[in-house]
Image 1: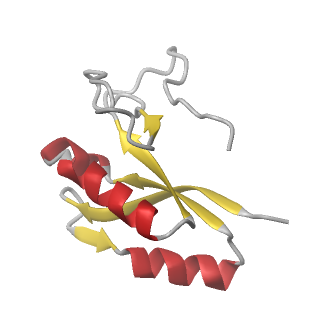
Image 2: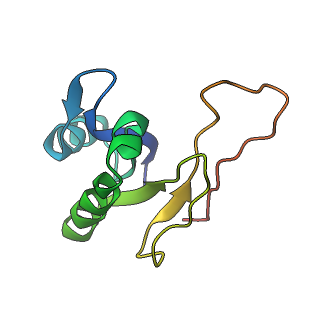
Image 3: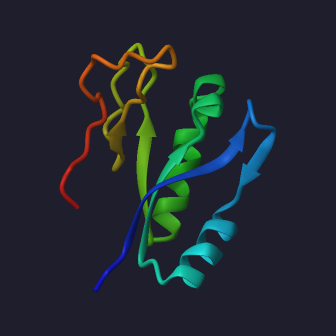
Length: 108
């Protein structure tokens, strides 16, 4: 049976002052018996530098174990050319409990 880790953060985090590497995620996946990893960039980095999405796609093209999700800012700017990403928008940082989820999840 294939096990998919459905929510991991990758790359540097501006707000937390840390970085989660591809190698670390792969090591944890191997230890846990995970077959594939859904990866999102940290929101703070994606908002500071949208290029992080391109770097994530490069990693996904290099390693088929990675399922890349593009971090869409709250402005709902479209994914450039769809390039092989799955879309993702966060819940608003202000939090709005009465609002339906704005996460978009395709069938894998």
